[in-house]
Image 1 (cartoon, rainbow over the protein chains, first blue to last red):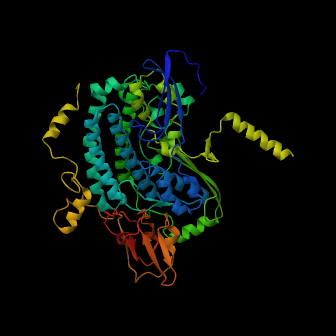
Image 2 (image 1 turned 90 degrees about the vertical axis):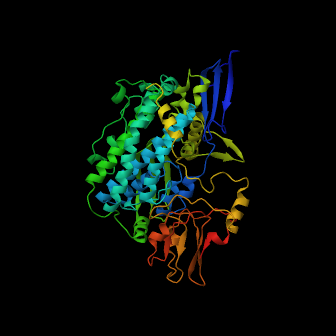
Length: 410
Length: 133
């Protein structure tokens, strides 16, 4: 973004990288006119952890657990899309039961993530009693996760070619009990979030992202669906068992009959998706066939197969925040030759700018939180030379490209 | 309803808190002293929430069964396992362990298992509690 000429009436406020209102390090530079925001600049790259590089020095089984640590909340979709990519490279067929089990885990994660987000949104507008109430409900979803996978957050359920733990018939009643609890409390949550005056005052007409902007800036996940764009990897390019399940795009007009693209609409989309996820899990439990849960239970044999594979593959799935893409290249060696991650927040950063323009300073936290950002997921590259950090903009990249052509010509 | 959170807030005033008060009902003025008291038997610790079956906690290692095949070292994502060549046995550093239970899955003789013990915080990462061998 170019720097605008500043008149005497505007002034600048830097917020971040470390700031009490932001959960993760990200730096904003606002140009303010009175209370209104006239210009926004976002600078990223404060939490680079070189996960991809580490992954290129680990074998695919080890990378699964490393991928889990890209994001604490999406600790299922990152390893799973890595597994999808590797399965595509190696041509591994996943058993049908495993496909259904994968859907169950994915949707359970979506419930946890969306309910967590709803609590954070309430906290950002200063409604802390709702935060505690929402997270109390989330606790049941976390207990269910712990029961099914063995831990609350880092699930370690993914395996290349299937999943690691089955849901046996004697576990089903416990799962159903939790789902019933969530369903009963969903109605309470819906009333609080969608009918309460406080929420309506703070979120309606605030942080608007139009459909055109959502399409132009490639927003993804609930952020784009709240603007009326019907985009969902689960339906556009079904993976796992999603092609056998009945569900549809969630857009705010399902409930209210109109699309505004504001923060209120994003709350509607996320809450309705929680309900949709509960229904999807129930469908899976009904329709799940019998059979094995993993295509190759012997891990040394699986690793030996992956060592011989050559090729590249992409794994994509709908994470709670949007579409996550993993690219993997295997070249017949123990470790992947290349691993590239694109987390959904990367797409949802630029939509912040049209959302924040024209809003008040006090709206910054709720608007910024409304896309459910996860900064540490996004940081993939950092350029450091002689202890100095630098950015490669379009001109520099073009210059480097020209230089390379010249080098090759010589 | 205009303020739909209000009934919930009033109802909560007469309900038991959802949170499990761990390790004590009220925060002790000095946690270190409190833990010393617990060890000396003077104070009682409030129990944790029970873990479900299949919980992945502290690793347990059956030394006699181990055949030293090194498969667990090959799959451990955080390189928490050390091989001791003279005895052909392994040593686990729990300070590095990520509790993924992959070594447990891969072990051909099932000499590794996961217990439900998870209170493993320690000031020294090489303390006796954090090394399994």
